Length: 235
Image 1 (cartoon, rainbow, N blue to C red):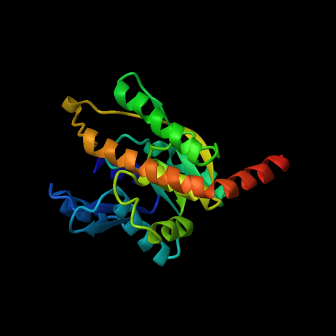
Image 2: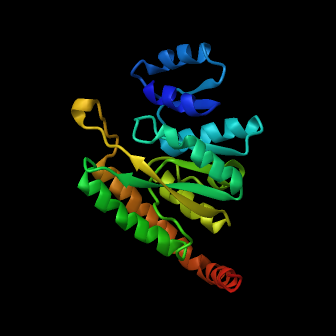
C-alpha cells in the first residue's frame, strides 16, 4: 500500500497487478482505487510470476493506447521519487528502454550485490556490450509494443528470468538501452522486509536462461557483429 501511495504521489495513472496474492491486500487496494480514479487494480487469480504479471499489465495498457510503461516492484525497494525523471528520459528517448542502475546502501546484502555481476557479464556478452549497465534491476521504462511482441513470441520470461531476458531481447530487436542510476533499499526482516528470491531455484532459472540466450546469441552473432560495426562507423 505504501508503495502505491508513493508512486501515486509522483505519477498518474498508477496500475497495480496483483499476482495471485492471498494476504488480503487485494481488497485494500481496490478500496484505495475506488477513492482515486488514477489508480487501477488488475488481479490474476493465481500466481503466475513477475514476467507474466508485467505482461498482463502491458497488454491492458496497450489496449487503452499507452505506448510506454514504467515497472517497479511493490516491496518498497525502488525509489518512487525517481519516477518523473525516468519518464522524462523515456519521453526524450521514445525508442529506448530506460534501465535503472542500482545504487546500493551499506545495508545491501553483499551476496546480492556481487552475485548480479555474473548476470551482468553474460548480458553484456549476449548483446556485444550494447549498454546494459545492470541486467537485474526491475525499475525500468519499457516501450510496450516491442516487449509484448517479444513475449508473445516465446514461452519464457514469465518468472524471475524476466528482467534480464527483457533487456537482452529488446537490445536484439533494436531497442537501445539508456541507463540511469537509482538508489535501492533492502529492508531488514525487522523492518518488514520479505525476500521472494529463492536462492537455488532462481539461480538455476537464471543459469538456464543464460544458456538459452547464449546459444541464441551464437546464432545471431554474425548479424549482431554487422550491426555493431555499422553503429561504430556512424560515430
